[in-house]
Length: 212
Image (cartoon, rainbow, N blue to C red; front, side, top):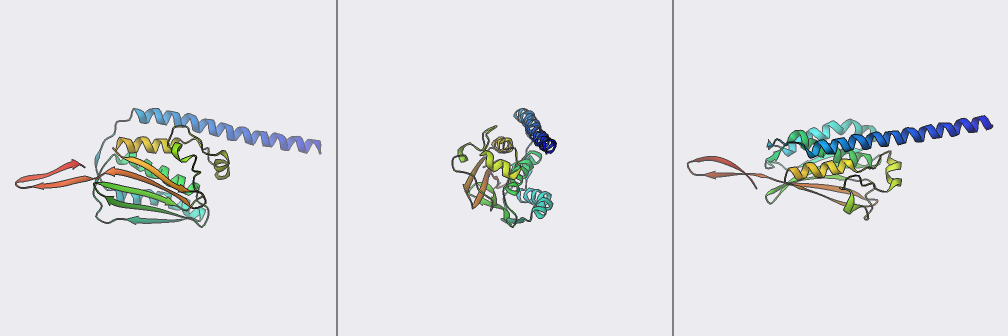
């Protein structure tokens, strides 16, 4: 009937307005977050990246189980310590894990790797998700960059790129770098590289801590 058609149209319009309002709210909150982060004073202490990785994965396990996604830890034993602002760096892990779970289908897998590489410590978050188009890869850490709309719509994401911009900012404050490898239909690997703390022993002198 005409009345039913009108009601359905109004319902669709209301849904679209709700989605637009959510995107706007997320955008505004993200902008405030970036402004705060730009003024953030980082407090660094000697930290255990393996321990932080375990905590981050445990926080996401319920979401992973709910989505039918397996989470694995592949952590190198005796990993060197890292100069960390743990409160900020855990956000790096949470943002990357949230993205990995968002874009990985049921039955997929998300694995967190750590290892030492020369004088650095490497953290990798690998997923078996849908991957990122090659054209988007150079831009995904840019503020406000939006990946293909179809990709974000299918996964329910707003696709505003603020999470990865936050990751880049925090990693840079740790004198590190973040990069990504991705193949559509195969998955992605987000790699964070930060300097290790090297403990040097000198005769008749206490151990000294030095950023490598």
